[in-house]
Image 1 (cartoon, rainbow, N blue to C red):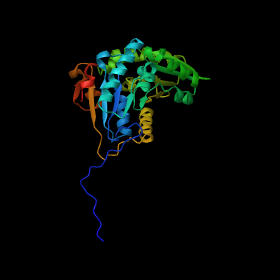
Image 2 (cartoon, rainbow, N blue to C red; image 1 turned 90 degrees about the vertical axis):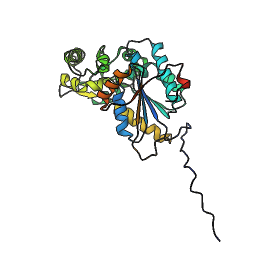
Image 3 (spheres, helix red, strand yellow; image 1 turned 60 degrees about the horizontal axis):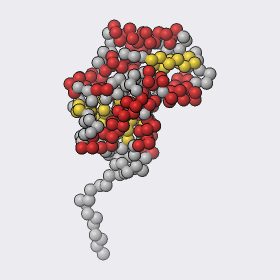
Image 4 (cartoon, rainbow, N blue to C red; image 1 turned 180 degrees about the vertical axis):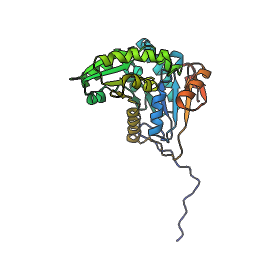
Amino acid sequence: MTGRMAPTNIPTPRLRGVHGAAANAPVGVFDSGMGGLSVLREIRKALPEENLLYVADSGYAPYGDRPRDFIEKRASVIADFFLVQGVKAIVAACNTVTGVAVDGLRTRCPVPVVAIEPAIKPAAGMTRSGVIGVLATRQTIASDRVSRLIARHGNGVRILLQACPGLVEQVERAELGGRKTVSLVENYVTPLLEKGADTLVLGCTHYPFLSPMIKAVAGPTITVIDPAAAVAKELRRRLNADNIASCGSRPGTERFWTSGPIDHARRIIGELWGSCPDVRSLPSSDDNEHHTG
């Protein structure tokens, strides 16, 4: 008896997870500007096969001194753009967005939303002096989320919150050295050290690009914590749990958008990311429903 051979020209179906997203769909990552590239870098290390979309909202940066409703609006606009692009997950690579707007994003988005937040919990477990310094924007420091982190993990530990106006702008210009940047870092770090801090938390995704300078000012006995790797780890966990991790064997790709000037974005992303990528203009919110990337 001769059996019928199965046809060989049927395309392999895309695997879909619990949210209905295809495993080969991209992941959207965004920040108020270029700082989230520090998170994108860790995501690329942890998830080399994932396709990544990055939005630098540099036309509206920095978020740190913006009103709450403004930040919520920008986060919603970018999330809507990502959903039109067909992402399977969104990463808020901005501590200010996490502190102000991430709960709203999680309510309205049909895909997982992973968010960065100041690494107060691990810092509390690492400090020897019992004093922690948190370097962040004014909005992050004033957020209810940071207050909850301190209440939850700050028992028996003194937590010093240091707003750092100006540092985001220096990174946005890729001015990672020079007298002005050194002076700003010294002005923000030195008072924390004088109060006994032996652990510093980088509470803004722009600040890891200044980590060598921060460590030089702080000295070799001070621990500096960047939570970006933890965000990448959590993203990997969520993608695996929802059965939407990439099942491809090819290296993933990156695509970039900005709400600021294209030439400037291309230059700064090239310096911070290490290559000169193609950068597109982020469409206005009115154009999102018509944009297909």
